Length: 340
Image 1: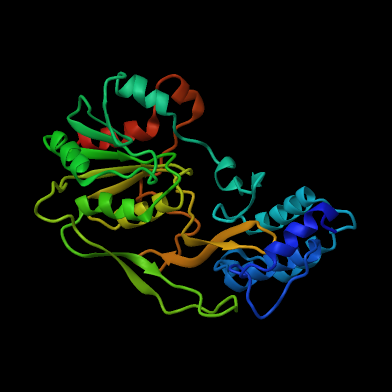
Image 2: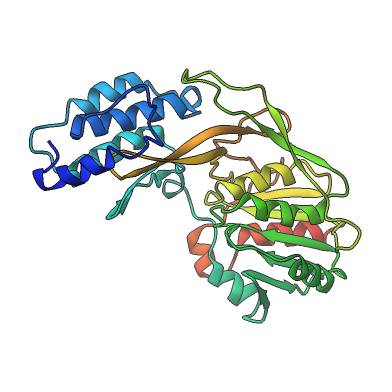
């Protein structure tokens, strides 16, 4: 049971609209009711059950049996978080005022393949320009280097015009998004618009149309528009550097860029996160976040599990080499362009 001193709070919360749980069923203000609400909300709306190959009914039986008399709210939270981790999805989070659950193995079980200090010290000589989160410089090989650490950081149109103007004399451009774990999809549109000249279909999205695990709409295209003639665009060769810690919006960016003729994706397979996440308010006052709209690339292939590098461009940067000042992924991109 939920501790007695929390019951008055729960009574108030249960009077609030069930934003995250369907109105056709009410849930008791106890541990079982909270558990059932979380499980059912995910069951009705989560979009990757088939892809994850998870028997959600079996998961419910196994975890619900672990609810015991006197379970504390922290213990219940931990139990539900452990259940949600069965989905192996970094977009699945359970939050209350004292913690946020997060599945980290999507990147912790893989090599990092990146060290920003190594790039700054041995390739940029601690001499580079910065604007709105971007790091940029012309490398000695007359190759432009641009590091974008997070799509949570909005880059203004004027900033992009200036940066691309500075790098415009370069023969090629390296866009490094390693360790970029995503952010705002609108920032992808601003950035990507500088590399296309016409309306471009970047992939396809579906949305849930019912509570069944396979009830989805038909795919509809996700379109990107060019920046327009008043802005600086890039037509020369591009390399996008990736590692496993490229996730969510960064994963979407790679999926679109990979289809452009002048782009090579170099490094490791991205971490995935190809679903549009939504947040649901739970009666107990917690919030639940997970993917409800699956995304696919232009070929119709799901991007949830990540994007592979371009053929012949899978490269890894071991930690011991990075510590010695050698970045094999960046070296590969520089050598590819220097040899053209």
